[in-house]
Structure formats: structure tokens, C-alpha cells
Amino acid sequence: MISFSVTHTSDKSNARRGVLLTPHGEVQTPAFIPVATQATIKALPTFLLEETTTQMIIANTYHLHLRPGESIIQNHGSIHSFMGWDHPVMTDSGGFQVFSLGFGKDFHSQKMTSQPSYDQVREGAQPKLLTIGEDGVTFTSYIDGKELFLGPQESITIQEQIGADIMFSFDECPPPFADHAYVKTSLQKTHRWAQHSLDARKGTNALYGIIQGGRYKDLREESARYITSLPFDGFGIGGEFGSKKEDMTTMLSSIHPFLPPQKPRHLLGVGHLEDIPLIIKEGVDTFDCIVPTHYARHGYAFTSQGKIDIRKRIHQDSQDPLDPSCSCRVCSHYSTGYIHHLLRSHEIAALSLLTLHNIHYFHSYVADLRTQIEQNKL
Image (cartoon, rainbow, N blue to C red):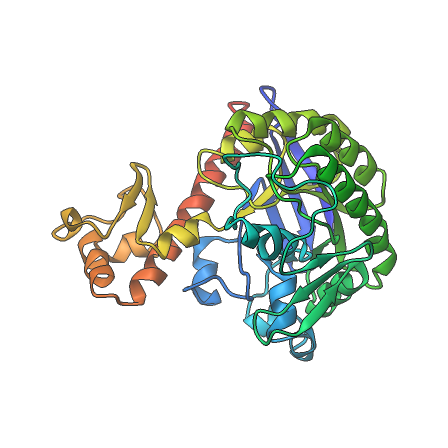
């Protein structure tokens, strides 16, 4: 199981410092959680991941179920020994894949971002490539085309066999372009599945419930009231919030009064640098996002001077590090010109170096925000 304690709450906002204790170590919060979908951070082995000061990672239940399968991971002891990572691990429930492999594919949108036209998905609609039923979701495997069913019982069983320190209840992550009626019906399923997820738990793995409701304030508050009434160990906040940054903070602020202060909160899939202070000020303890790794694989470095495209020829003669103020191994040992050369030469090492730097930069950025909370500056 886990335990959580708040060590300081800011005088200026809802931001708070805390310590999350898990069977595989502690996490100083607020904390950024890198995404390890397939039990790996793309382009970065775990012994290098440790150098980034990463405290915890989040892996993907659906994808690990397809490949290699939870029984293989369990035969290794747990996901920790399987991937050589003796630190905390979260696993999502597979609920995001209900969106990304369903309506996300139908509308060519794999991200929970606002769409040009809302209300494109109405009550009773079904995506083309999967079926959302009362008891769970029937997927078609992208590996071999076979059908597979995932519901609360199946999701929790898989997560327990994977051996995650923190699991999430199975939910439907509704599409951002759904109307109010669709999201309300979806939310009712998610609430039933939350109770079924609790009933399915057999082990001592911690379990978070997920608050949904899309961009609708009334549904968000309804979900927060219900999910927090159940005996979860913590709470996830999922889905999308609207078309503007202000919508996200408004929605987080609206559910804050319903969140038990003694339990941790995790925001799923949000973590652009400009988002981080905003969500932390609304009391978020941990959050995950693919931004630093995704941008690294496309040649971008996050620095104190902003996001930089290292592929541009302006960098080919640079003998400076990616960021002179950064203490990561990459900035200590390699020049920007060298990494530019690797990128232009299509060398895989460039992706590893940029990934290491970007994750380290995000952690350093959040560590500074932790200090600002302690000093009542955030």
C-alpha cells in the first residue's frame, strides 16, 4: 500500500508539498511522472533514467497486456524486476485507450485537446473499431486483429499481475468532442466501473479512482463527489477540460473542494511546461505527460531559454551545452554542435541524449516549484 502526507501548503494558492511513500520508495511531491508505455522510457534505458532524478514512472495496462502479456511480467517477479527499475511504478487502467483507439481514431485525434467543432459525438454513438458496453470494452488488437475484452475485473487483475505500486480504476475516457448527454452516460458507466474496480482488487496494490466529466463543470463536480466518496487510496483526474488554459484551471479549481486533503491527486496526461505551475497551484500532487520524450525524439531540447530545435543548422558550430545552467550528464559532457551532428546523421544516440536532458530539465523545473511552495511564492 501507500501513505501520503502533506508537509506544507502555500499561503498563495492550493499548491502543496508532500511525501508519497510506496513499497518501492518515496516520491517528493509535486512530481512529474515520465510515461513508460511499454515498460520503458522511449530511447532511454532505466540505468540512465535514474540519472534524470525520476522518482516514479507510469506504464500502460492495455499495451502491456497485448505485449508481452502480464503473465510474462509476473514470471519476472513484477514490472520492477522485468524492466530493471527498483522505484515506484504506476499503471493506468486502459481507459485512455477507449478514447485513443476508438473515437480518437475515428476523428484522427489521438490527444485530449479541444476540437474545432464540439458535440460531434452524441449519446448512443459507438466508435468504429471498438465496442463500449455496460460491463467493459471490446477492443480489436492492433497486433493480431483478435478481439479482447477489458472491463474493471480484467483491468485490475492485469495491473495486479504487472505488480504496480499504484493502479487506476477502469474508466471510459470520453472524447473531447462529445456532447453533454454522451458524457453524462459515460460518467455513469465510469462510476459503476469504479466500484467494480474496488471489488475486483485482491492484493495490497494502491488503487486510485478517476474523476471524469469532460469540459462540463456540473459533471466534473458530480464525479468528484461520487469518486471521493469511495474508499480509494488516491484520485486521478482524467480527460479534457475545454478549449483554453483557463478552462483547465477553472475545472480543477471547481473540484478542489471535494478532494480529501489527506489523499494524493494525480492529473492524467497534462504536463506542458506552461501548464505545470497552473496545475500545481490547483493542488495537483503528481502528473504525467509524454512532452519531454516526444519532443526529444523530434529533435527539440527544453532549456531555460525556451524550446530549441537542435536540428537547425544554426547549431552546427555550437560548442556550448544545450543549457549552460543545466546539471545533467548531457550538458556536462556534450556540446550542442555534437548533438546537432548526431541528429543530422540520424544517429539513435541523439534521441537518448535529448530524452535524458529533457526529462532532467522537467524534474529540475518541478523541484524549483517545490521550493517556491515551501517559500509561499507559488
